[in-house]
Length: 291
Image 1 (cartoon, rainbow, N blue to C red):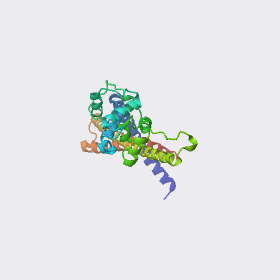
Image 2 (cartoon, rainbow, N blue to C red):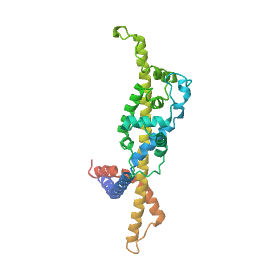
Image 3 (cartoon, helix red, strand yellow):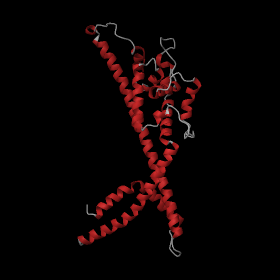
Image 4 (cartoon, helix red, strand yellow):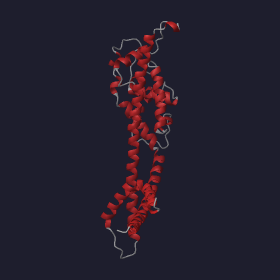
């Protein structure tokens, strides 16, 4: 077969596909613009992060078990709860006063897990945390976790939440020993074995916290990307459906249409391809140019 004929056929097919995917790229761009507008108007990222963090804290009831530190009569024992952990987190990340109204602090998690909450004109101090992108938000939470790890008795609820999953004995030991200074203040005579034990204990708990935050970031980041991609597919399909209806409605009389079923199928296919149409257009242009 003549190579020139093959090349002409490929270029002709690429030209046909290029026109189709240019249209899909336009649909994809319009869909993303509509989605971004909707996200801005509804403050979707703030809602998503607030709901995710609220569920994350509430979904760890075992972390706040009174049995963690033994009998309540132990020195410096204090009750812990998801609400207190959330309040301490907001305090350490936004500077909001820790001594907030008790009833208000109890309602924080419930309010943030209510996806129907209309926040468009309601701004709360904690939105300074949740309005950040995921990486920056997790950076602030990491700083708060480090403070709680260094002061476990002061921020006991956040401490037990962030260290949940670690060895319970490590959690107990650090809780009662974090503020205890070595008995021997002479640096030359400090018990090196005890110092190493404390350093290893801190490192183990810090590593658990780091891995816990990494897991949260990976999971919620994937959820956010999947939600955006699914929304783009749905909006693209709807836009393409009404576009094809309008084209068919305005077509000259006597023109053969594809019917509603055909339009629906084409719209679903186009909705799936629209978000990636721009990349396909770039590839097809390279084919036409012989690149």
